[in-house]
Image 1: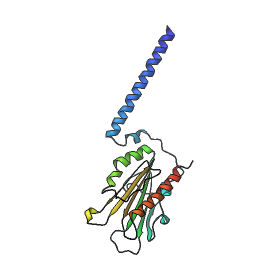
Image 2: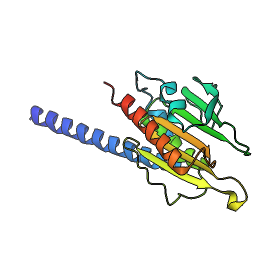
Image 3: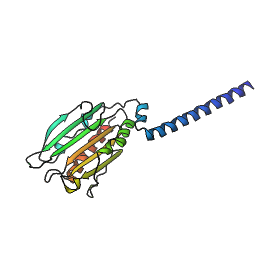
Image 4: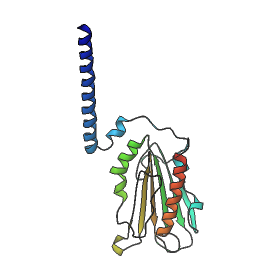
Length: 208
């Protein structure tokens, strides 16, 4: 009789733990819906990688002809750029020998402690940098990104067109901003650069 009571007591305890765990998970999911980033705060274990944010930056060899590097930050100071993370990097290019108002190409790389943190910021903050529409000739699909987006905006025909491509690769967020420049930067050029970034990140993420 005592053994049967112990078994019943243990079963009741296990069922109670399962119910509490299920309720807790449900509460977290609901709170995450209204409080983006909660999952990031709860999951604090950082992912260890053999590469840094600066390793994911492109170089001149990835750009079309007629560009130069004007700024490079292997470690961005806090609160510089659209996002803030513990490991971030930045590179800026400028088109050479062309008389045009805006001739800049920029790439930001942000590494987070884990995928939950990156996903939260991507959904809540990154999309704020996107405006305009997807060009009909944009047909690039990343092989490795968990989510990505590309848009261009021409200021209703009042100014030069600017395009932005963002992508999240697990705990890494990539942001690219480029002004379209005749003979220097086209949609096709941005697509080729995105392919280079995709291949570089995919190679690093697949390292043992």
